[in-house]
Structures are given as C-alpha cells and as structure tokens.
Image (cartoon, rainbow, N blue to C red; front, side, top):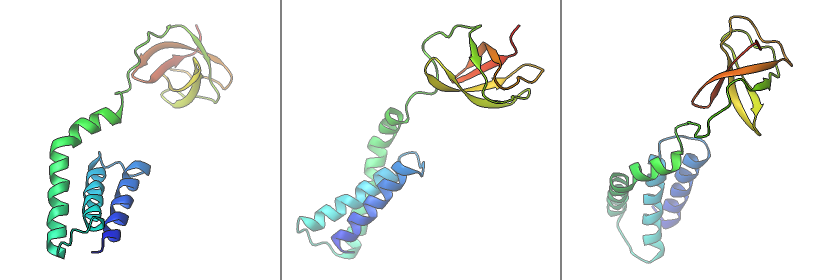
Length: 145
C-alpha cells in the first residue's frame, strides 16, 4: 500500500474513535500504527507489502500492550461520582411531568443532571421537587413534603 494509504487509514481509524465509535481506545492504537507505517514510507524506507503489514501489526500490538490501559483510564474520566456533598432537601424545578420511576434532565447548581422520580406519585411540570438522595450523577427527587 502506498504511504498515503496508510496515512488515510490511520486518520480514519483515529477519527472514528474520537468522534463516535467507542472502542475503548483500540482504534487509536491501530490508527497510530498505520500512521507509523505511512511515516516510514514518507521517510523513504521502502518496505515490501508483507513487511508493511507485519510492521503495522507489530506496532499496533506493542503499543496496545504497553500503553492502552493507562491512557484509556486517564482519558475516560471519572466514574461519575460527585466529590462535593449535595445539600439534601434542595429544591429543583422539574421541566416536565415525571411519572414514578421516570427520569429527565434538570438544572441544578449551574449544570445539567439526571433526575429520577423515586416518589410513588407523579411530579407535575414546573413543580419544585425535593432532592433527597444521589447515586453517582443522578439526583433522586420526590414531591415536596
């Protein structure tokens, strides 16, 4: 394959991982290996087709084994836990009617949260519901008492 073919393939794989396909960082390293083979071609290293594919596979597997787990853990972010203690009993406006057990997005403390109605009765739109518990990034709300 010509050097530019490797570069295109690497760019497409890298872009797919970054823009939509969540392959847990595998496509990043496969794409990087393709770019490495392409850069070898740009540098004037003339490899036969079979050697290009072996180099591609070796670089991809080596990089995945050495770096993928550490980089994936670093880039995937937090596990969705809130460090700051929330004030239970705070009131939030519910933008839509929320049946028991249903969820919606709400504004709370300057950001958007998932909110779940854990009450046995529906919460009507526009009502200020009470925050009484959190699980990860989900606020558990109920009708005000």
